[in-house]
Amino acid sequence: MNELSPPRSRSFAFGPFVLLPERQLLMRGDVPVRIGGRALDILTVLVERPGAVIGKQELLARVWPDTFVEDGNLKVNMAALRRALDESPGAARYIATVVGRGYRFSAPVHHSGSVHLASDVGVPAALNHNLPTATTRIVGRQDAIDAILRELREARLVSIVGAGGIGKTTVALAVAEHWIGTCKDGVWMVDLSPLKDPSLVPNAIATAIGLTAHSSNMLEALSAFLRSREMLLVFDSCEHIINGIASCADRILAEAPAVRILATSRESLRVKSERVRRLPGLGTPAKTAALDAETALTFPAIELFVDRATDRLESFSLSDADAPLAAELCRKLDGLALAIELAATRVDAFGIGELIEQLGDRFRLLQGHRGGIERHRTLTATIDWSYDLLSEIEQTMLRRLAAFAGIFSLDSACAITIDDRIDRVRAVENIASLVAKSLLTAEMHDTQVEYRMLDMTRAYALEKLVANNELESARQRHAEDCIELVERATSDAERLTRAEWLVRHGPKTNDIREAMRWAFTSADNTALGVRLTVTAIPFGKQVSLVEECRMAVERALDDSFQPHRSIRDDLALNLTLGA
Image (tube, rainbow, N blue to C red; front, side, top):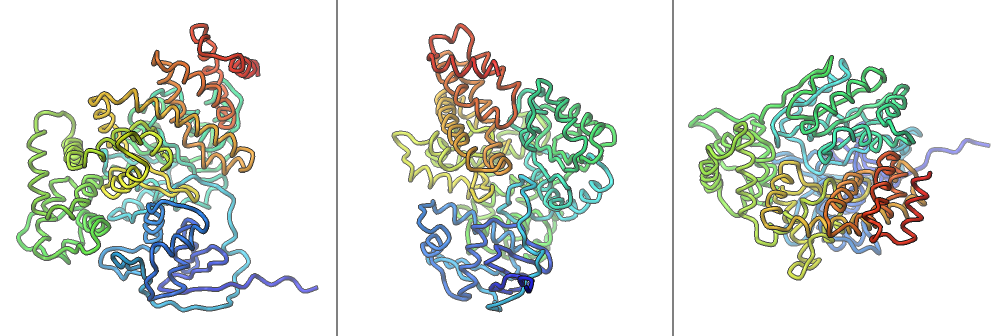
């Protein structure tokens, strides 16, 4: 009997890319491009009819058949697709936006109805990372990325250090992407920003890598597990519990010789053999009278400004007259990536000159009133200015969304923001607006769009939440949403593999932990805390936080909380404690 030949498939070639829809594969030369399934489906629809305008509703119907989805999903996946194709201002674009009508694939496409594929190309790999698929293009950091890649091959701990908002996480994720497939046991990101207790660092790492451990000493169990593993761990946002992270990293490096660590922090970990890469602001031109648009765009800060401004306003382009103004704006913002992005989202409302004037007023207002390094004050001033320009409903939404400790879904966002004034339609519109204004980021996790508030923005929004006396109500809604999250996670445990389950639900651990802590410190919400604890028992077991689960159960069983427990609650809690 003849051996089966490799499958035959359509192929669409354009530029350096080849799309193989039946294999769910996009190749750039001989290298597969990392891209989400929905973004690939959008690309397939567009390349099937190059030159034709494809309406938004047709795209939604083709990519999400028989499913109602929010318009924001299309926008986020389109952004991810454009990033995968490496589209940039001034470069040859593959996808053109036809304002008010839809999208058009504008590059020549060569179509083949049957193409042989190498048998080892495009075979789905086992899930071996939890990195989100970025939806925006990285600007001006290639030299830093290349340098950190070299250092990470030579050293087992590399720390990316810099001011808040400068782009440390963006660079770390880009470096980590290069390591996918090179480490036998995967690449795993550990978001440490929500943690307040340094002793929980080993628990956060265990959850991220999918460690199953039933131990009261998680660091000991973690070290033993990693001893024979080869992987890259990305520790993101270390500065607020740096001593706990440093001691954990030191133990891992000593006991697990094939594990590497890439960390982001505002200061170094000060661990033996650590390599420190300080990330400066994006490059800006020195003050000069002669600066045209072409020259200005060679500077990364201005390139980022134009890139994000074009995302906001399709018709935006940098003129020779505006080039010196853009340079002045980027200099005033110290080359801070987040500050530049926030300013760029307002080009539809202000000219560049007016942006400089408005931001200049805010800088003068804050001068001398807030401590910290200059770049920190610059970023605070920019967030302040951006917040004041929001509508009242956008401000309310931003404050309430600060209750989330990590990533959150659109449904969860609606659950804690909707009230008598804000219905679901308005909530969705304003979430999309906050993403467009760079106050929220949208990420692709698996096939789901998830949202996140950057650390600096969240800290700012939490201050506003307290100032408006809304903290308790937002926390209560957040805790109620966490109950729904753990119920959904418990149901999914029966139909997903453990690796798939952890990628989808593991990042919610910090939110559940924070909701429990708040409920038991609020006298009026103890009953909610007991309910959340009971509901979260299967979740705690699934993420192997046995010691945390035991402590939570003992707290819920305290005699003072007895009036808030049912007989069923007592049974579940005591059975868990006994186990």
